[in-house]
Length: 250
Image (cartoon, rainbow, N blue to C red):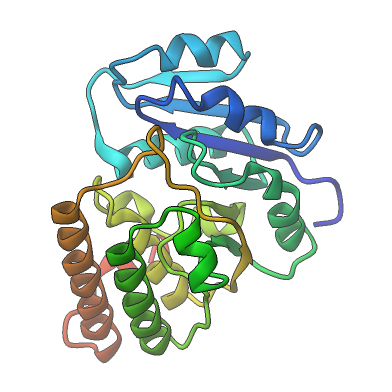
């Protein structure tokens, strides 16, 4: 990018009143041009807290789910002219201080999409509070997905992500799920379409106020991820081509 890119941070929020301010304060000053918070029908004071912080706030009239929330985030960021979009969970589970480093990898044309990697070491991830069963699921699926796609990401299941505008304008993310598997669909879509994926180490933070899905939902998420991988195989083999893995307009 020849000129300074417009950077927008998007925060898909649900009941994040207690952690929102800490998350926003951690974004280094001057790193982003705008912060958009999309509230998915929170039952606490998330919207009021966001407005007090001066954020651009969009409130869903009904709960659309994690994937549905992200779709609103990206639509609005693109509409506002973002060149780079950073998605940060406002529950303080991820370290927002890494924002400029993720942006730099994209603005310097090293990567098209960057993720935070919480699995630098097993000890660090578990010490950060990641439940052992989630660590095991994360490791197994990540190894499998890297082998499946030819990538070498340290983690496929991070919620800290940065995208170039080109990625968001090419990947048909609108066709993805409104649930948690949206993240996996997006990554596989980007891999199939040949974008350069990279990651950067970020500490794991699990605590009472941070959002986390249950063991049952984790199992559903894992099975849904395997289904996405099967869809990729069917698409690439030509047995069952899917618009989910085709660039927009093709």
